[in-house]
Length: 240
Image (cartoon, one colour):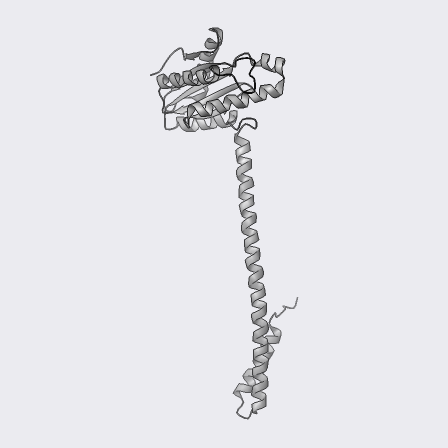
């Protein structure tokens, strides 16, 4: 395959001009003609260079915009993979992943809470109302926690709060604050009846097994449910 010379015309003009320049017998008209060819060729190259540079700059801007959009889509997909669609809280997989990460180098308190009689809410008022209750509950959790902890939704009406380097006693106090924030004011999406939740709390030392921490908090939650609901219970066997 023959290689294409993109500068064939310019190469020929340059060769003719060089020949004229090196000739001692060249006439003035030849010099003027060679100079005119060089000027014309140089002007054409300048115009083409500007056009190519403009196209390159435009292409670079388009690629930068495309890369930014791809990064945004990647971040959105990563967020959706780790968060609950209804509430924006961490999903179950992300809760366990985050908890395991925390326990590598710190102690961890875990609050597990469950909306009381949630099935009745769905049965009496419909699933859209039930979804609205879940969203409002998570908003109250965020407001009560005021930036503390990591909120997760691990089941239909069951939630967790991960509290890194928080003692069991402080976690129980915080759980009581959250319980009150839920129970003491009617939900705007369900003003006809109160919404309450039951809580179980556990604490784990660094390098502990999170599945065990979850089981202990869940057992405390079970005790709260059977103790009358709308209450906070700590793990049966404490470790601090």
